[in-house]
Image 1 (spheres, rainbow, N blue to C red):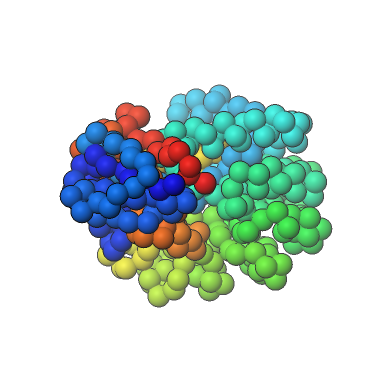
Image 2 (image 1 turned 135 degrees about the vertical axis):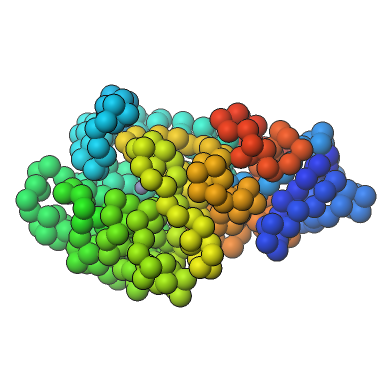
Length: 384
Ligand SMILES: [Zn+2]
């Protein structure tokens, strides 16, 4: 059974580049895009879904999220909005709550967040561990994440937990040894919070050790890089061939040159700067240097608790001067590049039929109508 989707006022395929088709139609067969073109040329199909003149874009690819956790940090947010500075230290609060939670509590929260994302147009999401920080709790968080997404990331090196205070190198030995061994079977990626400016995170040598061990265990590499200062994270990510360097808020000219020369995607997370009242990354500088830029939410209970990719698009346009087209591409094809996926982030023939419907005549409304729930994932009968 295939399905013809009609009534598409504007279709963005990202195939190639933005690939805008007006008055478009699309055939979905067995969970994949089988045909794309003008409505007038559409072939017959077993079923038909009419979207009534709406816009269709590729489902968002949120390549950076921390969704396995318990607890609440709204009071920390309130304090920050009154002037307290963000330095990553509040992560310990979530670690304590996560360790104390049952599997069912963590699973329930995780499922609710993934459903919340889907209801806002996100069809692929990466989920990190990083709030367990013991061998058993990190493995548990990744097992739960793997129930919902293949894009699971081992982030044992999120912060140095309180019980290892002053003994960061001992903690790195745990992360690269027994913890990695327990987690690698449940993870596709390894990540590290490389931030010498934070007393809680990891310096360049420690980050290198974590990434090298993860690579040796068969995992792909991602890095929390240059969020709070122009540290070594970005250049380390490029040197080691990481799929993505995430944050990229404080960059030197050498960092930009390295990203432009390498294969590492720069993933910008403007929801974090919004929610920590910090200066935004310089997206234009990266785009003009030819760097591949992705946008993601960094959905997490501390520095940014939004699950909305549309909100991040609006921020990228308003605060980072990306065009609506650049922002949409980065939230879809850019995220796919950051996860080294070719089957999502576009709607060319053969792609996964992950369609997001915008209740508007143009994709521009994603940025033009900030905070308005106009985009959702299309649920098609027979979709796999
Ligand atoms: Zn993060």
